[in-house]
Length: 347
Image 1 (cartoon, rainbow, N blue to C red):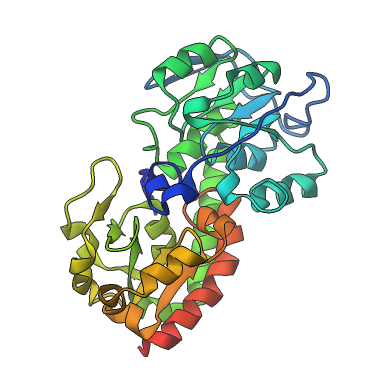
Image 2 (cartoon, rainbow, N blue to C red):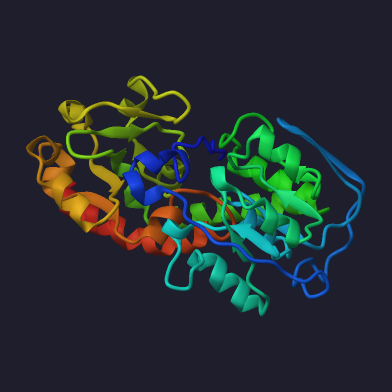
């Protein structure tokens, strides 16, 4: 299965739990000799490598040892390929008490390697820290890097941006791009097949999921209601576990560039054929306000309590994207939540 990575999500969907998804970040530097980066066991790949992207062309002359990542998913894929980055754009909202997204922290510590230095991203991209990290390559195929930023970054190191539009790279394409940049193109298939097997194995343990439909909704505050379309990445995660995305989501007019639609709370009754509702909230206070609304409670699945709502920011983040580290981390947490919602649905 192949799913798109259109970006109403973690970055552009900063509107979804309003201030909660805004990126707040930190930065530092590292030493060229003690990087912890690079695959110590694999071959060197074939170089030079040329990767054309929407903002320019990255000419990578030799096997990168010092990797810096921007956006989402690149850090996880690089780690899965044996290249722990020396630096990464941080994402405070999706991190835990360690200051890192937990699946990244866990995997790097398990490998016994040095955690990447984190730096500010987005509009306030910390170019100075990136330069101090002295990277051999900058990976940003699923990001919002601008042309102006790219023109500065490419003078620091070959920079691999998105092939078409910001935040629009397919998850499997992202893996293929990064594998090529790191000299391991043959490993992309291994990672992609591994992800799909994870989903298939999980779905096989829950054959009853096929009987249930769902919609994945969001709000931008009281009185609002939005729904993610059936190919949006977080919907794709749920679908690949065996549940059926309610096709009603694709009948609404898409909010430009988001792969979602703001439909208004007055249209919540149009989700009546969804057995389950998936969603998330910015904080407990927001959840209480949203759930207190009569029209919200009138959505059949919501009224029954057949709702799967991530309460911890790291889980919401992990279940919103597909890459080698987030998929196993989120699946084991998702299944018990879905089981409980199905019980409440009465179907």
